[in-house]
Length: 426
Ligand SMILES: Cc1cc2nc3c(=O)[nH]c(=O)nc-3n(C[C@H](O)[C@H](O)[C@H](O)COP(=O)(O)OP(=O)(O)OC[C@H]3O[C@@H](n4cnc5c(N)ncnc54)[C@H](O)[C@@H]3O)c2cc1C
Image 1 (cartoon, protein in one colour):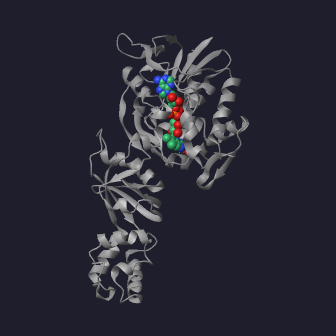
Image 2 (tube, rainbow, N blue to C red):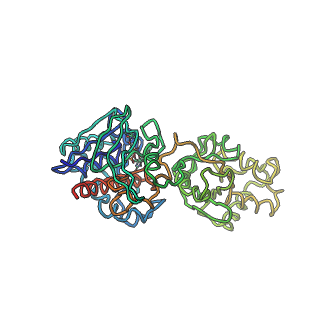
Image 3 (tube, rainbow, N blue to C red):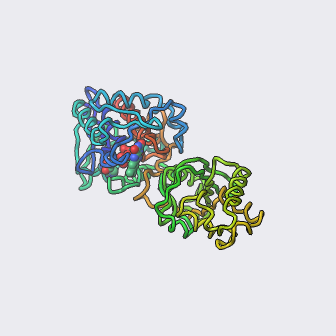
């Protein structure tokens, strides 16, 4: 009987164990929590956006880091394969706006339940409250490719195996069990790590006025993320002001690109990235100027601060007046052309300075991790230790929201499981 150990019972680990479990193989899934899928349970606000039903081109377009590395994993086990597997296992799915796929029941627990049944059916042994402390391996003499031997558990017990698959996740939402152990395992076995940072995460800004707008959500704005002269991201959508800065779908996605502003540095350099908000993206600067002029002509005798209700939600007006060069008490008919033009420019380019991201406790995903340079993309096997595999968020892979991150976990987990079983029979 060939032995395969999977470390971590999250999305990638459950899929890897499922794919590795074939007749003649004994697969043990080692999970330090008391149950499977603690993070999966909270995904999609408890509904679990299991994948995205879009075409392959869209899947790749939504991967933020190391998309090319995922070629074999995505083509080998794609979104359709995940959906078919879950439906066969008794978890019917539905597709919503933006091709986001959820269980019909809207309960993430049904996805976990489906995996529990699949793992049981394939005879995978589940060991809970079992924390792996170290990878046991044999370094090659003379230096070359080492060989896996097994794992050492908390307490010192060793389990020996033909293959070990590390699916321990990243660093975000540590309360679910993702505490970066897999990255330590990788380092201890000689692998390179790409510096980690929180991603899909709200951003802290230097401007105090964001606090005054706390709770205000702007539905159709354009956000640009700029570092020096480089534009890193530009998109239209929804943005939310908070007591520390900005959040909402647009900001979470923009945060994926923040890493590029800090490339090569472990810690974000404060204030090296700026956000610019276009509050009226449907209008060009000329069109907006004509619109503002019309508004002003209709309200000639009003004070500036009282003449903006047609342009902004009430909460935003005092802030826009404060940020403009125009005295709020000034009569609209006294505003000069120059003042109006610079106000229009402000509406089209409201600047915010990024101080940093919120912490891992608020980050949907970890950017960085085990460098894909040390992993074979066709198998997920380490290039340094034969029989050692990595899958899921522990790797330096991440994507936008919309089901793409779980697809990375499913696809890499499946490829690692299949390859580990193939490799273990050699
Ligand atoms: C709030 C939130 C919502 C999200 N929503 C979505 C969504 O709707 N759609 C989407 O695509 N993505 C979503 N994501 C991202 C998605 O959850 C992750 O990409 C995915 O869970 C990664 O899977 P994984 O198996 O690699 O890691 P994890 O799911 O983190 O699993 C890792 C497992 O390893 C175990 N483990 C760690 N160290 C050890 C050890 N030493 N010994 C034994 N066990 C260990 C942990 O306890 C854990 O169970 C969300 C993330 C968060 C935080």
